[in-house]
Amino acid sequence: MDSYTESFDKAAKMLCSDLSEVLIKIPDNKKKIIQEIRLRSDKPVALSSGREALFVCESGEIIYSPAPRAFVCSQHNLFESFKGICGYSVYSKQNEINDGYITSRCGSRIGICGTASLKNGEINSVTDITSMNIRVSRQIFGISRKLLSETFPLDGGILIVGAPSTGKTTLLRDIAYNVSLGKDCRIMRTCVIDERGELSGGNSGHIDLGLSDVMCSYPKDKGIIQAIRSLSPQLIICDEVGTDEDASAIAKGANAGAFIIASIHAGIEDELMRRSQTKKLLNTGAFRTIVYLSSSDKPGQICKIVRNN
Image 1 (cartoon, rainbow, N blue to C red):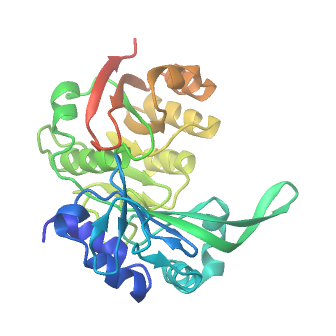
Image 2 (spheres, rainbow, N blue to C red):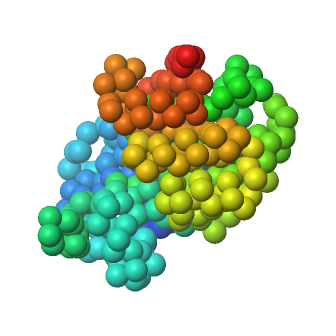
């Protein structure tokens, strides 16, 4: 079994037995391309390869429309899977649920839909779960080789830009692995600020980040500052930056002599440059290179590298 297939099976096994037994039967060549498993109450189980929508029969056969023989996720299946993903302690995951997603022990992000309860204009709880979207977490070794060959040795930080499911997190994982071990570049003391446990897979051991120091569940701004104070990193890696607090911490990290490699959500260059958050990040002086990723059906593939002068 290769790592692509194994990653899919780990995601499937997080679900209740009725669902996981069906998903495990899917042919390996299809498991390799599936990026998301989407469950909706009393609706067919939907799968996404990034380019196309797929559905599954009880036999494991893949079909391309929600035909009557497509396997349906019952409300019971959905709720049992939700409880299992929460470790049978929904209350302990409530803060994550309120933010719209849970990060599993294997690094997969599970998006949550339900009924929100508000308190003082903020989401206080989410109940009556109606759908979940499981993004299959994968580690693809060697995916950062092109980027390392074109940007190392570093003369500044790198901002990786891409729409959802374009492989930003996967690319960051491989950068951390390679740079911390000196593969395709010189060894650098590397610290990963993993706010959601998605980059490292938490304490599961599912994701290999080489010799990186991993600060799991630290908010990015606090993690960057603490890393500078105590770990003397040469390279700091973090995912999904954009807040004022992130920009301030990144500026402090760069001023302390650390290179920063981070990612940000944006579909195209024009969209990125229109955002006020982007201007704040670029004005920190921390990022000398902007890397744009390709489409979601080619995770981690670079379409353009731009120098930020």
